[in-house]
Amino acid sequence: MSGPFVFIATNRVREGKLEAEKNRVPGWVRFIDEREPRVLGFHEYLSEDGTEVEYVQIHPDAASFEHHLAVLAAEANESYRETLEATTAIRVYGEPTQPILDLLHAFAGEGVPITVFPQHLGGFQRA
Image (tube, rainbow, N blue to C red):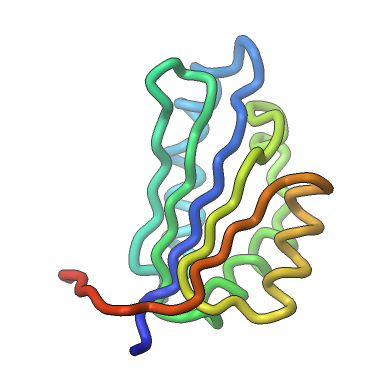
């Protein structure tokens, strides 16, 4: 059963940069919304203690996520690096292609766990 491609990345907020991150998010969300019309959902959540954020992305398929990675590669967003220190974990729901896995390893860096749940057993989403 084919399902959406879901990507979740946990990132550590740089010390003293939480307000800057909160201010950066609306423009970043707008940027993704304007350049990636196939994305079904793009959200950022803040941890209870304010030290981490998680990006939750919902794509219709892996090709949409590959496009997202191409957009990121073409648009090196300096503000992201100013407010977020490091990716600490990645979770993928759906079957990633080898190019996706290669890029995730390159973007996240060595030692960052990438957990993949490739098989969608069932579910639904509303428009």
